[in-house]
Image 1 (cartoon, helix red, strand yellow):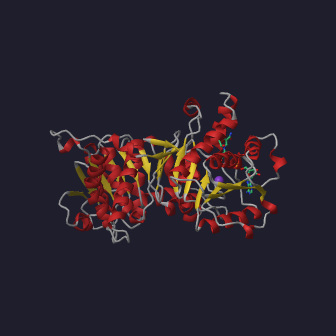
Image 2 (tube, protein in one colour):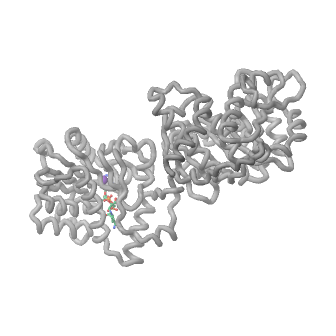
Length: 520
Ligand SMILES: NC(=O)C1=CN([C@@H]2O[C@H](COP(=O)(O)OP(=O)(O)OC[C@H]3O[C@@H](n4cnc5c(N)ncnc54)[C@H](O)[C@@H]3O)[C@@H](O)[C@H]2O)[C@@H](O)CC1
Ligand SMILES: [K+]
């Protein structure tokens, strides 16, 4: 269900433990890494004989992987030249130095990069990028920028294999710093590093392959990492409904929202809930808007107070309270509006002695960001899910959506640590964060979900899953994955976008049926 995504620091710790606690020689780990890299090249070039390769080796262990790979390539009759960033004697006594010595014994040509005139580099078939891996920090030094530009230039006509991480890419954030190698394939060692999985890394990583290098499983179990990717196996949480199912047992979702000009939001949330299997859906909305909120969906029921107000207010709570026993989950906020009366409704809701599992979305998030003391009014913090998009998240931190997107994981952690509630930080590679747990990251980044109403659909899906009895963590992971999977499907159907938010809801059950059938 979850694939580990260690940060460079966590990976370095696993390496260290393998070496110090399990007495695995670092030279062996490096040898294993180089064998995994060789495997990729053999796959790419069924006959390596006669091919030419340049191996860029940096000053740390990433360079050492390059030295070790050079030997294997020579054994496969590849014409290899190594370009190393440090003087040979400076590698002495290190793991990389050991593999350098072996490469020297085999008479592999070695050039000191800083002294080599880049203009004389030959065009080759293969470029191996072993400049920088998990040890890369900060901004590239200027000479590295020059070398990386050269790799990318030669790479226009050659196959570029990056070892562990494309050099220049931050292994934690996935950001080029400020530029990075554009690989055809990145062979990352043991597990995919977090940054490789994040959207900014996409133009650099190429195809991502994972090569196991022999880190004992025990180390990874006893020292779990702090980030995981959601995998297809999350869908195993879904079970086929029994043929005797009663609608009352499939969960009744209440959606609280709707205001002038914003009736589509609760309608779409209702559609999301229905299309993800909720038995019944009711929208609490202003009386004057009930027809608009229902639209052409007779399946959507409405709840309202007889008055002429066009915004919801605390008086709506009376009727909600009377019916509260019916609802298994609530989605609070789609199209709610930011009127003072809406804030009063939210406050009265939070004052209820008991309320169902609740998703706080859209305008309710605006109120929480403006009045953080509202968080103190939440009784069971583990029973609510907050679903901000980066713009809404920025309001909590007093910054901009771009700042959030630069360091999404960091802000997600800060949010749950501060407010102690469950969080879904929407956007490409949506994050699920639950206090005291690792972060779970969606593998999907698709422009087909980047449209008005998409978040309302997600909120409805979440409400539906909660109402069907999934825990907040499972509902969040499953809902995010189902929403992303549908977005990916719409991307195939509408490569230039143009799908509607309601298409997400309408496609969802069919996409699920298709992919679950395929994977069985
Ligand atoms: N025993 C281990 O730790 C293993 C490590 N392996 C490889 O080793 C890598 C990690 O090795 P290291 O920890 O030595 O680190 P790296 O080889 O990734 O990088 C460290 C070197 O980069 C330089 N550097 C850091 N920031 C820089 C910047 N901004 N501009 C220019 N240079 C910069 C440092 O001065 C240092 O010399 C992994 O990514 C992996 O490829 C594998 O061989 C498997 C075993
Ligand atoms: K690299």
